Amino acid sequence: MTPTILYQENSIVRDYLWLSLGALAGANLRYLVSRASARFLSTDFPYGTLIINVTGSLLVGFFLIWTTERVLADPKWRLFVAIGFCGSYTTFSSYAFETFALFEQGHWTLVAGNILGNNILCLVAVLAGAAIARAI
Image (cartoon, helix red, strand yellow):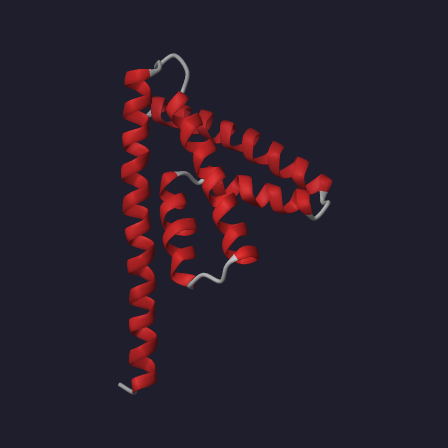
């Protein structure tokens, strides 16, 4: 192998390592927050999911803006925090940031479509998955 190809392969492996480490941390924190909210709050409402979605959205919004507008961060941190950690902690953070970006750009119809589409389609998908699971 040529040094260039070896370097590229090592770079890809490092990228996956950063992403995986972030995902491991996010998944574990998600489990911890879910368990703690069920224990200390209530199981009548999905407080854990709400807390996770809100805090994950807060983190990805802060991190992506901070690292693109305020500081120059190594791209590995985007892999670790935004994709790995927030991606496994909550995918809602991606949805929230994308909606925010559309909002900032003044794409009001797309904002409404994204909000309605994600909420309605995901709810329908949950209902469909539940129906399929109950049918088999």
